Length: 411
Image (cartoon, rainbow, N blue to C red):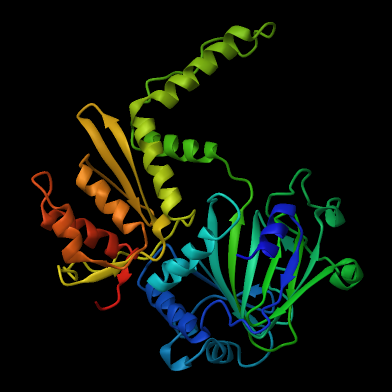
């Protein structure tokens, strides 16, 4: 992400960043292959991915023929088949990073380049030949970075204050999702900021801005990266505690006693509440779950859904060469437990707990240099009485399965 975009993200103002001679973010034909893979997974019951289709602003009930096929040959061919060239059809696939390992790696690399700490994020593909966005004028609970793949994409964007008093808009909803029903866009067009780009261009607006998409009726395709603005470490604590509660775990803490009608000096109540919160955060079940969620959040870069691991069959041996293109996809930490020290580690959002072995840590340190490595030389250097070469190779295979390693160059 270049410095200009970083400045707009920090200043929270919309912007257009023209590509010049730069190619689009991804090859549209490759993205089409990911789209076909997404359709196959959705029909097979993959709950991580979601395809939504619209005709003239109305949601369309999906039939089997509405899913992408290889015979469509391109995103434009797919749009033409499902829409018939009427200028009314569009679709969005949510959690698009889960469709294919290459889509996952692309989304991760984008998040790694952002000028912000990892935040919960979404990755979508939008495409269609519609003249006006099927959601109408609305705002999201996320900052939006749009990468134009094909065609010309235009958005009309307004600051939150423009429609803050519109019927149905709740006070204080700057960072919340909201829709403006039956709004006459033409009436407010001259007040809009026009954010427009062609293939290769990047468009940005913060969560506080209302927007609606427009086009001239030709096929457009974009990849959208959503950064959830209202996020904090407390969300991880909340999710960890909820998971444990659903599993029936005991956090060994209670809500402070006392009548809610007593009024008066509440110092003792607040003191007891603070003590219980501190006690709960220090409990071993919650501490361990928080460790896991924090590492998973870091190595997945806030992307919740991810593609299935690659097949388990052994694909690496001592003659293989590997490279980690995104070292931040692997993280580890020493953790203490009643059974002794543990090695907590995470790759691309998957979390593992092993007995603490220094040889594994040294392996991680080698891999996260991003260097092109010979597996044979790596194992010869690291295997010892503490850990065998086969065990180390198994760990490398796990990392490969989770899309964090790519083949290295031939020696």
